[in-house]
Image (cartoon, rainbow, N blue to C red):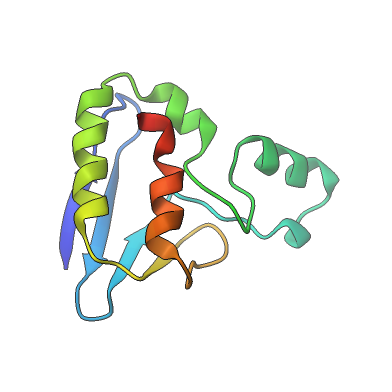
Length: 112
């Protein structure tokens, strides 16, 4: 299993894994894809505003605000996007089985 520590934030840190055999990217918090039907209106709204609601979940906006060293974060992103993953297994929400690489590219678009 390959790994990279996603850095760039002084308060948030995450290790991202890539399992070569299954072509699976494994994340915990930096990409979330919460199922909207699992929550009431309040949490659905909060998660939608934080850009972490399925089917188009992504990198939470609160994390984005904590990333001050964008050059380091971009280097970590480039390692992740360099892996040939075809699916994403994540802790928070619906796993991504189709167009996974494009989905993660979109999740990191804010770093440009």
